[in-house]
Length: 370
Image 1 (tube, rainbow, N blue to C red):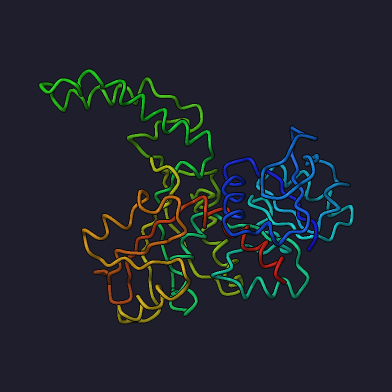
Image 2: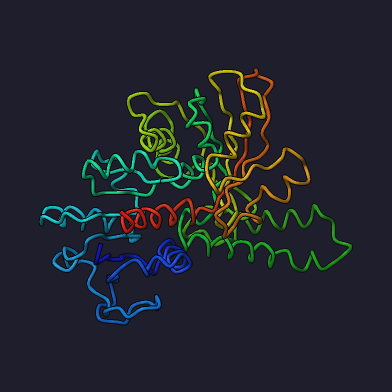
């Protein structure tokens, strides 16, 4: 593969992708990386340790057609605008996309190779050329619990999510930090007074949250609160984020003909970039805990089993610990009071790594090494 085009490489996910590709020396495998832009055509491209051409126009179909593969983190609107034109022009290259626009297309495969490398390999053998990163919570769930799914022991599953601001975008992350500062500033005088009553401080915090916070992006306060709805409504009272849990999981696993029931409630919380999830898992038979733990821990190189111990859990199973790492810890494993086939679990994962950039990077590497 000689020429690989990069679009959306300056955004949040794109920046993480660039960092990971440099860490793993992926650019050494590409004869000619070509960087595209929507606003700075002709400017110098990023420093990737090798000479590259000036930035090209991301809307130039002729220039895009020259690529053997394109990897884009530019977003769904760009995909909807450019992808059909590129295919209509006869382009036969590989399209790797972080956006959700093409995920459910019949001619697209949702990529998470530690979990569905067999599905990816079959797609490559069939000549499929479109590979799309999955929903962040779905990818992180499967990275953590993939061993149970692979063994065929999941009858159904619910996921109650605790999703970070990063899933909503860079502006939302900034707004969360701004809200935190506004809450602190609003109660500063009372906090500095040792004689002030905590209920007075609480009243001031609530007043600030209800009246003075910046909410241009989230629409409501997130700092000190939560938002129990993510994305637009769909049928049956679900949000689209909750709908993705069912449809994307089964597509990733190649189970569209025999789907596993998955549902839950998706909630935005005041974490920066790690999504956490609380699972109730109905197993199709009673399994010993040591077998369950072995299936989970041996599924891939990044899942980490956390003992169901208070102190270890508080240290290891948190966004603070996991942010910026590829580790996907799974803990709070125990059988539930509903019966021996009911399993409780909790996981954490970095939304910008396994939830976004890393599956794209690894898909490109698969193509480069083919």
